[in-house]
Image 1: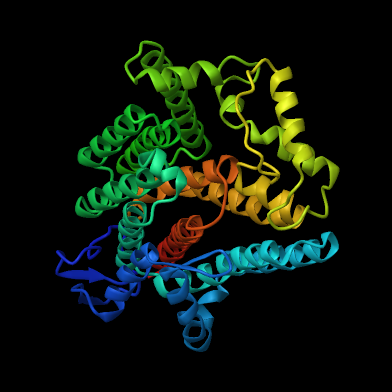
Image 2: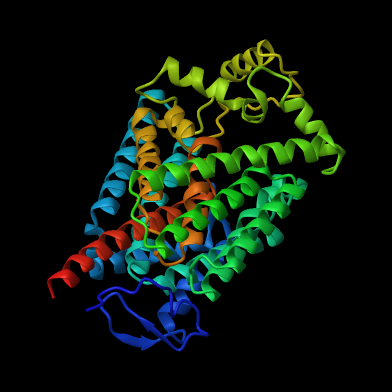
Length: 438
């Protein structure tokens, strides 16, 4: 007796029927709910300047919150979602307390509080609306990607004007390709999915976005090993985990070697070569050379590990400390602006600097949840390549990417996907137990 479908039939409208998690058949043509799920993230391309920048998606998700609390409150009882939401509320309270203690400026703390508050409310709404529906997870992801690309084209920021691929189009386009190919191929590890992943790895490498290129390669290797073991019905336990982890680490090393060869040979252009030579000259190598903000934010955390420095924390001394230590490690210190914000280039470090250790705990819990889910998947989950790409990208972002603005749409969707895949595994395990008793 089957209770849960391990495939992904019915993800896109081209499918005629789908199996719900309760085993019933239903039409998969877009209904009003599906249409809204697709359009809400797409409207992030519309912006309103109030308390920083609010996007159309912000306003629509906030408008949906009362409906969710009134009719879908039971869906928020999922253990992992409940923990994340409670930690998010604790993060918000910690930020408020920090800003009161530090005497933050109103224009700063209003943006800081809204950033955290919107993160918590968006996650609650996204989970409550998408829960248990593979198709809606796919539709929301497609809308998110299209909306992100439109934002870059319609309302570009100062960074996307300089490098539209790296600061605007890369993640939406890459994720959209993986979502589309994975959905059309049934969500399983088929050659076309691997070809798409390796192709996008090459595209991002050529366009000098190493992190996303590496993540595409790692995703392909991970999915191959996971589904091979599943197809062969292997139950290797820790052996399978060690083999997969070894293959992933080897792919990271291989990508780094390929990138080093390509950039030093001039195949990626003079700008990429100059950037690489600048970043690899010091003792910390390319990673620290490209994330020098770690030096400043680490000192800010050491100076105040429990209570943060406030929303949009300002202290020019930390930037100066970072530049000094950067030079001591053998890097050349280039031009710097006069901004007095404490430099952070990490979800977890940014939260720790601004709101204290409670903010860091929120992101560290998400990191633990993500890594744990990566290790627990069986290989038969719906849209496995999509999950794997999102999981590895989220781990990278937590450690090495700043958080804010439209990033909260990606982050809340990513967290919901992680919990969804984890819940799928738990439901499948429960269903297998029931099957064995019937």
